Amino acid sequence: MWDWFVEFGYAIAFAAMTYSVVATFAMRKSISMKGLPSPGLPPVTVLKPLCGVERDTYDCLRSFCVQDFDDYQVVFGVSDPYDPVIGVVQRLQREYPNRDLSLMIDRRLHGSNHKVSNLINMMAVARHGYLVLSDSDVRVEPDYLARIVAPLADEKVGIVTCCYRGVARAGIWSILGTMFINQWFMPSVRVAAMLGFRSFAFGASIAMRRAVLDKIGGFTAIAGQLADDYRLGELTRRMGLATVLSDVEVETMVGEQSALELVAHELRWRRTIRILSPSGYGLSFITFGLPVTAVQIAVTGGGAAASIIFAITALANASLHLRTDRSPWRRAKLLLVPFRDLLHFALWGWSFATRRVQWRSVLYRVTDDGSVQPVVRT
Image (tube, rainbow, N blue to C red):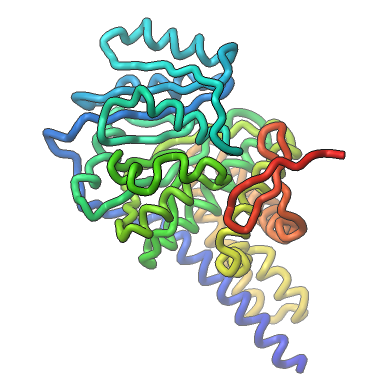
């Protein structure tokens, strides 16, 4: 029995090592695109649901106002008429008077997901048949719009999404948050895409035709979903339409200022995915290379094979970090890689404890279909 257990442990450790190597390779591999920007792309409406102001909100929103694109509209949506982000939008409207920038302020709620309620309200002023959705903390390059929309010229494409890179605002916790995105989540997406899987869509950037959105029931169809972006992609795939991973990479600002904020954010994401994809999430522990291979050494008492597996995994993770971290201090931050991997493993285990998630200041319970219900505190 012990021999079987040891062999099984080696198999798990070898799988974790293999994943680490493949993930490093996947992040070096370029995403190939069939639909490239071309003259005569149709007019586009960009939907930017907003809530609150961060120090880089202006820069993020401005990047959508300076696109190299002939005809497009940007709709900014706010639910609170006293939200300070309204002043940022009005500043952009003054600075770019020739750009079609609309501001929708509407308190109406259409479900438990306030962001989707915002999108539903914003559609009242959306003028074009091609839509691009993007979160408020995303920054893009001037050619972003042309590149993200191009694949929609193929009628077989239902939704276009893209990878994103976390940029730390300040502090150790936001740095760890970017490592979650850049060195764990995005590599897992790249590996899945390389293997032919397309069961994803990311709120950082989604492009789709308005006609497709209407056929799935509009944003109302996802008004109660926590993982609204994931569900949007799933509904289009049910129609037999393809999901395209664009070669565009956008930046998303990561601003967790405390351990509590970081843990709440990551647990919300993990518990949602656990419920939506339980088998895949359950097996995702092999992506935590260093803890898994370290456990193997502890169980077997070391040995040449276990040590080699651990060393290869450590080298692959270090290479992945250096590949994805573009900051001047990336070599010094190598010291954070083992801690970040351990935190991944701990939060993965903790995510099985409950279905409750913290979203802003509200506590929710995630149901079997991915929708959320507010929890009444007693």
